[in-house]
Image (cartoon, rainbow, N blue to C red; front, side, top):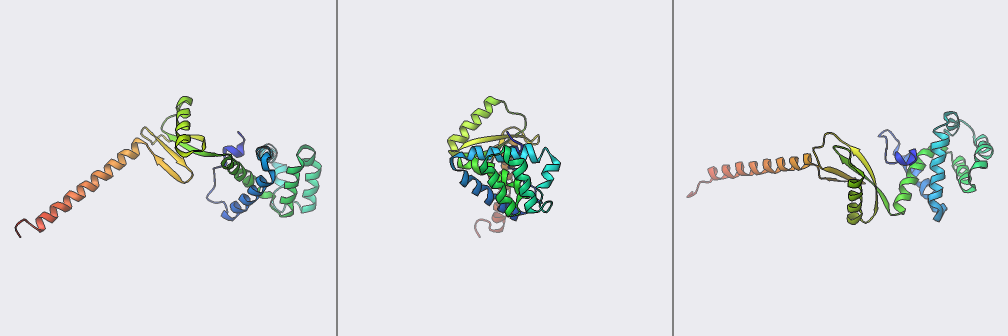
Length: 212
C-alpha cells in the first residue's frame, strides 16, 4: 500500500478546509477523465507523490507554489516527468501548473484514493481493539461488515489500550462502540437514571402522602 493510501484518512486540524475542497474537486475530475482506467491513474498519481516528490525533497520543493514560474515548471515536467509518465498524467500535471495548484498534489492524491475506493464499492473502516486482532478474526469482522453495510470494507486495525475488551468500529462519521468500557458506561448511566427516578418518586410520595 502506498504512503498516500496509508495516510489518506489522516487530516490535520490545521489544514485549510478550502484547499481540501479544491483538492477533492481536482481528484474527482482526474478520476472522471480516467474513466475505466481510474485504478491505474490513481496508482500513477500516488506513485508520483510517494516515490518522486516525498523521496526527493529538492525535486518536491520545486512543485511548491511560487518556487518556479509556470514556464520553468512546465519545462521541468516536459524534461523530467514526461519521458517516464503516461500522457494522461503528464497532461494532468500541466493543468495543475496552469492553475497554480501543484502544491496540492499530495492532497489530491489522498482524495483520489478515497474516492476511487468508494466508486469501486469499497470503504475504509477503523477497527479499534485493546489488543492486536489475528487475521482470522479480521476476516470474520470484514465478512460481517460486508453483510451489514453492503460495501467491501477496507479494515484499518488500531490499538487502544484504554479499551476493556470488545471493539469499536468507525465507519465514516459513525461509531459503533461494542467495547466493555462502553457497555459498563451505559450500565452506570442507566443505574444513575434509575436512582434519580427512585429518589424523585420518593420525594413525590412524601410531598403527596396517600389520603391527602
